[in-house]
Length: 268
Picture (cartoon, one colour):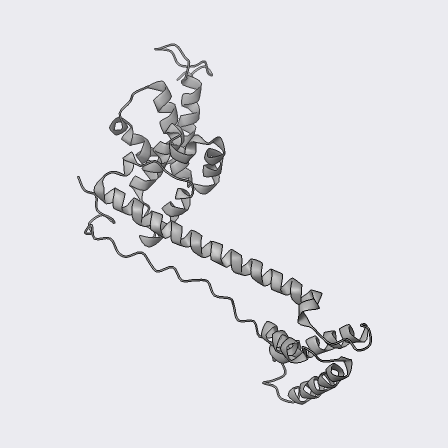
């Protein structure tokens, strides 16, 4: 039977929100430093000293106006002229300023390139998650999700599906992940992925997986439908489900008809 998402609504899925490219934040101080460097390129020590005096004069004038006193760009420009003045003063006579040989500038450019690469990686990952969320949502509607094996990163996709639904927890997606985790399907074949899942997945999903794993060992070949109660227990009482899974671990290996040794029952 076709399942609706969320329950009670049509199967027409809303379009995934467009992933906006992350933009470099506006930094007035950085803008001010860049303006100074462009202007200072090719200047000698004398010209930079004159520009510094002009910047100091402008700063004194601005300090008289309350709305200009905290101008971040102007303060950054003054600081940069002071730095370039010191740089040229320590250089050989006749040296002119070249931002291409300024170690401070080159370090900033390297940091900017690294930040841009990180933003690009973040954008690609967001696009991948959105596309995978669309795919899993379509598989749910077709009733073929159970025939799909999870991939690396599907824990984040689960979070995206939940976010799109306004906080509604996708019970079938959670059950799908729990069953895959319990049976070591998809990327959960890797022990490292299973360890990582303990951090990425919610306690109910983890408790469901643990309970399914123990039940499968105790009753090999049990049908998925027979174990539907495990999901209900995990959702309503995740701690109890985890405790039950731990208890069943002790039961494993006990001869049929006998419970594992434990404390004497309390007499009434």
